Every structure is written in structure tokens, then in C-alpha cells.
Amino acid sequence: MSDKIEFTRNYSDLSTDQGFQFEFYCDRCGTGYRTRFRPSALGTVSSALDAAGSLFGGVFGRAADLGERARSAAWEKAHDDAFTKAMEELKPDFIQCPRCSSWVCRKSCWNQKKGLCKECAPDLGVEMAAAQASRTVEEVWAHSKVAEEDREMLKEASWRAGVRATCPNCNAPLAANVKFCPECGAKIQAVRHCTQCGAELIPGAKFCAECGAKVEG
Image 1 (cartoon, one colour):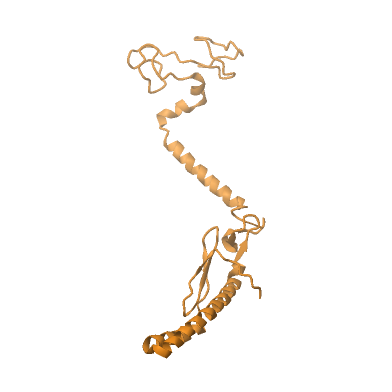
Image 2 (cartoon, one colour):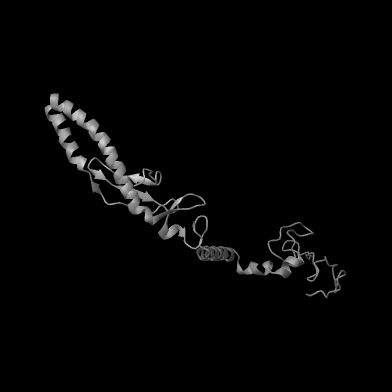
């Protein structure tokens, strides 16, 4: 058995004087795996020594102190042995990514085809599904903000024609693309552009002066 102990960060030690138990965690998703509780043979002995020291004191108390120091060293060794066994028990469920060095669970966070964790090499199918769902939500919000009466203004023809924000005669604000000012009744002469080349059209022109295309509408 190797003297080296891995998993020195992503675990919790649930051990007590009565026995040993550990939990190991995935660095990516946080999923935990807990080992079964392993009773410690030293637990019973330490309980007896503690009782002797508290009840009798004197010689028995000093014996308990000596036993405590011996027990501590023995307990630490037993603890390391138990941890090593726990590590060997759960290590098959984890794998270390060669790119980011994270310990991840094989079940949910390991990309077997790429040989990397899913943080470094995500599943493209999952990412695509998530992207599509996100885009769908964006579309829902985008369409929910557009009233039916405003949809005409979003058409390409309306963008090319140009829309005035204020009346050129009285400077009253115009809330929509209108032909006459609602305040003074002046005709709104919106700047128009050719639908073919985008050039600005001369008022009343039937054909574009730049490309010769017929002016529609």
C-alpha cells in the first residue's frame, strides 16, 4: 500500500473517537459520497480510560493520561489507515482531470469521449439544448415587449423609410410613425430611402436617383 494519501482537499472528516467516516465531494457539481461508519477498537479502550481517570484520579488518573497520549498516536495511525481505505473504496467513483486537476465524479461530470471533465470539455448536445432553450426564452421576452400596433414599425420598410421623432413644424413629439402631426396638423415628410441601395430619396421622386430603382409606395 502506498504511503501517499490523495484527496486532501475535497472531503469532510466525520470521524469521532468511536469510529471513522468520511465524505468525498465532486469539485464540479458538489455531489458527495459517504463511506460507511467503521467502528474504532480504540474507542472502547479510550472510554474506559476516561472513566478511570474521572472516577478514581491519583494513580489511575496518571495512567489515564499516559493512556491518552498512547491512544492519540494509535488513533492517528488508525485514522490514516481508515482514510486510506475510504479513499480506495470511493476513488473509482472519481477521476482527476488532466487539464484543470479537479477531482470530479465519473457519473455526472466526466466526459468519457474527450478524457476531460465537463468543465473543460462540455457535452455539446447538452450545451446545444441549453443554448436553444435560452434563445427561446429570449425570443419570448422579446416578443412579449412588442405590442401588435408597434410591429409595423419593426419591418424593414419602416426602417428604410425613416421615422421622425418630432413634428418639423411645431416640434411636438410624435409617438408613432404618422403622416400628419396630431398637434398642428402639418404633414410629416419623413426621410425616405431606396429599398434597393439605401440612398436617400428626393421628396416626390418615382425612381431612385442613385440606382434607378422604382420607388414603391
